[in-house]
Image (cartoon, rainbow, N blue to C red; front, side, top):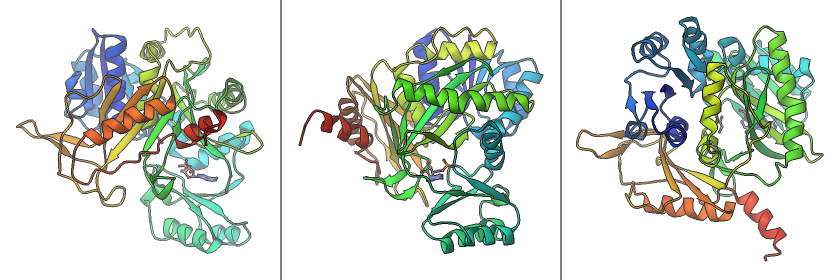
Length: 431
Ligand code: AMP
Ligand code: GLY
């Protein structure tokens, strides 16, 4: 098999790693890839959004199927382009990817399909948005409708703050076109979960739930980021909760998309707020694997890439409806100093060769000099995944790996999975 992975982050390195684990003979190509994917296959010097070049590469390299990692090429129609040229692909069409690329569309789908989600209104004009905010309870949430790299959702403590954010988006072009339409919604309390499912549009296989940590600082403080770490499995995501997410969220979303002429194929990611009453409310949908969730999930689901292949090749006959994690995994992101606002790039990165077995290092924002020196080349530099029999053991392993990797100003959280670990400690009666 010759497989093309589109993207160049930690998620795509983890996808390549899992493809090699599951099918050691596969020939892997990554576009553009990173120094980590270069160790597993061939990097193609093609940006993830250069659709023409990607379709040509699939042709020229005789690719059997393509896995699209990031949302931007999906939203731009890469999967449609590949299919139209006769290539197999894992990832939704442009029309189905709107579930992520337009929050206004996603809200409309959810309303129509009666999927639990925060009450909301969508606006393109400033005055009606401001008068809606004037009557809204505090706190409230303002979201740029379009793709904003995970930074377009602003939780506002006050109506004044919400008014400023809406003004910046609608009147001042903050977030560019992505902010020309905004969604204003109720603030929801609860605990967040990332629930991902593989689907060919009809059948649905739910992966173990993961929990992301979006804030920069320990104890969930500081600014929002693309994600500082994730782990699985998550104790509160019981089989019955995942079944509820399937029944109340995932299946209705697929049916509604199909009814709108946009059948969904790929991985559907539901960002869930589990409310105190046990109802799983949807905060957002993503049309792709999560980053860093993927770096925690794929290592503990052996064989999972065969399912991606079969979905792409339209030969998928899943045996289970729910996959479980073979072990626990904690993925900690090592970020550049100054991340997320102004990451400082260029520092040399040293990854010891003899990290413990059960420690996986996935590259994201790295580059390699001609002399082999690895350097910081992006905000999120590496993800270090620790595996263990328990989440606590996996976190120790991940944190030890982070301590041993060296670069100036490295920034990471050593408390990933704190909720799970404190819950387990409570149950064990520890002080
Ligand atoms: P989103 O991009 O929509 O997932 O939002 C990013 C982050 O903002 C989420 O992971 C939550 O932490 C927070 N958030 C979004 N919507 C809400 C909401 N309605 N209530 C509370 N927090 C929210
Ligand atoms: N980890 C959040 C995301 O991938 O959108």
